[in-house]
Image 1: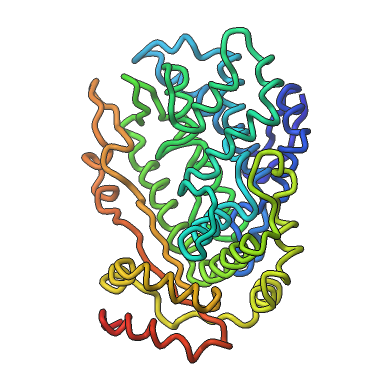
Image 2 (image 1 turned 60 degrees about the vertical axis):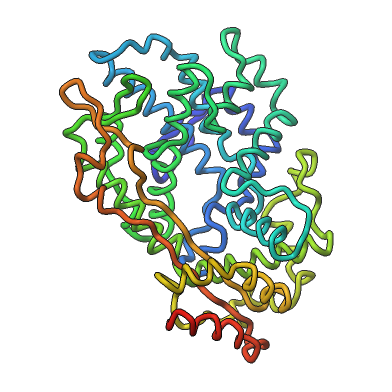
Length: 407
């Protein structure tokens, strides 16, 4: 066993079989996949990667599972939670992001632009893109090794169904909720980690209290009623991180610039096809090394923060809805100007009805029924318009659209 010192969780224990996976080229590649795209152009400390996040999710997933078994003993039997099961849950956490492409979600946005704006034939599955690609990567690089890890489980299928949120057994169902649900190991790690590296306190919450309050009853992950305040703290932390960090207008501007740059590289066939056999080549270093071939405007913007400007007001409310209805027209404007005029939108649902449950007096109820704070959380929607200074005279069409909603 190895021990890794982590700024978020303290010491992370890495068992020998996990160490063999961590040491593979396909996992080491995650050291070169930035966790939050170009957020470091606004928050300089945010250069952390999917590598340490994946280790953190592995650690937290195992911790949550251990506590769930302890906390749930008086309510239900979870006899399948043993050391072997803990290893599989940890392994699922470790590999949940193995399919991420350069600059993480920014590359997924680039795939969307490539398809919808530039008419390039690429695979794009929304926020599930990296999950679908990840399952292919697991098959290609790790399948033979994972199959040898257990006599009681089909490890490859277990991990793939868990990270895809398509469980078929009670064991997979619990693991899937621990890895991907409104109160999971993934969010638990990235909120604390991103907040730490951004140098802000918005993402902090009492993870130790949450660990000790989670239970699994009737196929649902729930919290004890006394833990409602800390779950509110968690959900508010998530909302504040989205509003102030992930959806920061300048962060969005530069991620949009990079997205168009990547789409241009695809258009010029300067990026390898996105297939499992090419994954070892697909990292941030590749994109940065080819930026000048995407266009000097993109290069100077991302390397020197020069050239692109942001429209003085964010697009919200009625104007956001107006631009969404005119998405085809906006896409045409972006295409005509080769990405030097751009529109980028942000959308997030802080909380949806029936997503987190509260257990009290032998009843399971939606958290929104028990918390006025949670029931008041609203959808976050806004857009930004950016343009290169060389085409400032060409944004009249955008102005005309905006006049319709009196921004």
